[in-house]
Image 1 (cartoon, rainbow, N blue to C red):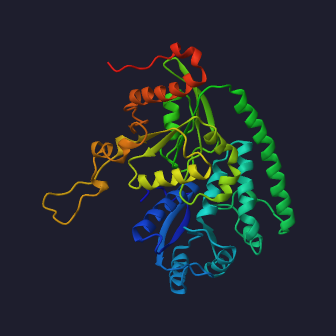
Image 2 (image 1 turned 90 degrees about the vertical axis):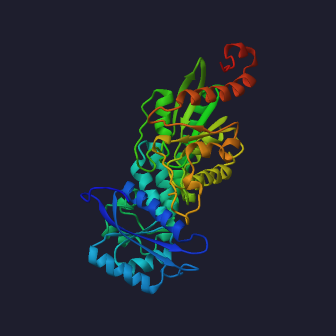
Image 3 (image 1 turned 60 degrees about the vertical axis):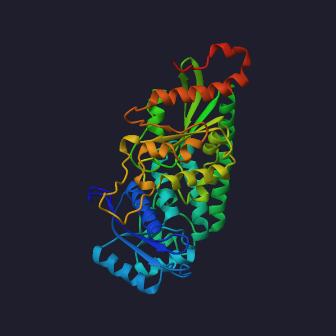
Length: 402
């Protein structure tokens, strides 16, 4: 699926399951995403395995026969890491490791590892370290000898790189220390947010890798790091933006993802506070992704969890330059038209037209339809601004269509 050089990449095998909650198509989609996560972390996927199970095996997650298939492949290809798409229990991870005799990760630990790579500031590193310790605490038994044996690589960043004593009390003390450190920084950041005055706050939210940072760069004329990898942005960036002569604050937040580890949601509380305290959300969607509707649902679910689902929101469908739709051959009498066959114009007349006033379709990369975007943002920010500052309403006139 992904083109990448084999040099410097760690050989990885992915394992997923098919059950009532996720059929074969859904399982493939999840593994595609897991492959992108692996690539982001520095892995080269050389094999993928799935198994149909009603309930995961409590000891080894997958069945004995499938485990032997994975073992044979791991030996033949000299694979160093096997990653499971769902979170493993400490017992499952320990048992699988004894069978496969290589590094075993699950989706949660992989995401934590990517966050460890991406954390640039002291604050972000502290947040990630706290999330890692919370994840590792129930997995202490028999784990540290493995970490000493397998230094470096995917899943081994952060606490795994140092010698950690197996005493749970010491790890809990470390968690308590990190929580106090974060509380102190949170108070400082809360003060900073308070010092920004009464300017309208707008937050970019969306699934990871949908182009939020690129859009931020375009409309704020700043240089926020943007890359075609998952979780390119961890630290919230806030910029003062002026459209017309109307100033407001725009923040670029960490991207969401399906099965986002609860440890990260808790640890990144302050980062998510930028979303909680925003007056207006710009929900950015990668319309070129075949499963963008599910990405929307995932983001909405997390917004609901952090009590931000009811905020005024503009749906911004990005990457229209990369959007392609399936076509049906006139001679093909079997294929029925599905949403995958919709053109952009057809999409605009679906549920998208009923979200807010209407949805926006742009390309942040090619700067397509950005004037329409700026006009809409101006109008929404102005509505909020004039309720806050009714005495200077005349400074910010409505934009009248010619």
